[in-house]
Image (cartoon, rainbow, N blue to C red):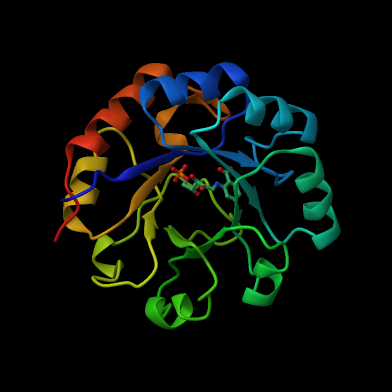
Length: 211
Ligand SMILES: O=C(O)c1ccccc1NCC(=O)[C@H](O)[C@H](O)COP(=O)(O)O
């Protein structure tokens, strides 16, 4: 039986937006622990949001080249189910936390996607995002979806410039486990738009990933 594509809504900064994301049908929410992001949350905010969503929603904590001690410290205070590493972290760094993790790859021109994915055999998933120099994520840019590998041993999550309008097309064009969105469901940076989240999840769940 074909499973519907999983949806993660990233860059949640309030309990109200987290609950609206869950009510819209999101499978996962993302909390950004990267200070330079307009979507960054404090540890206290993150703990409150993570505790508000209930036990059947995956809470993902997102880091960019963070010091290991800071990540361990956050893990003591925030109930994160999955970590997402969005910088230049290598596999040894990622697996030291002994938590399920996603490795984000930014799709720079010329990147050998399959070879890079193969360096993260301990990851529970690989997230493919658009590349923009100097901006580690949340760019709002798309990349060429034909670069998404047709076959993969590890679940692949598609990100980068997805919106309620293009998510169906993106899913139909690729073979993926899930989609990840941030800017495409915002009213303004860091503030989600409930109607956009509902439309995004509806379109994503209605579409089948390519066989
Ligand atoms: O969202 C951010 O501001 C961000 C900053 C630094 C690293 C990663 C960040 N977001 C990670 C995500 O998982 C986003 O959903 C992904 O980059 C796609 O963003 P968008 O193109 O805005 O949908």
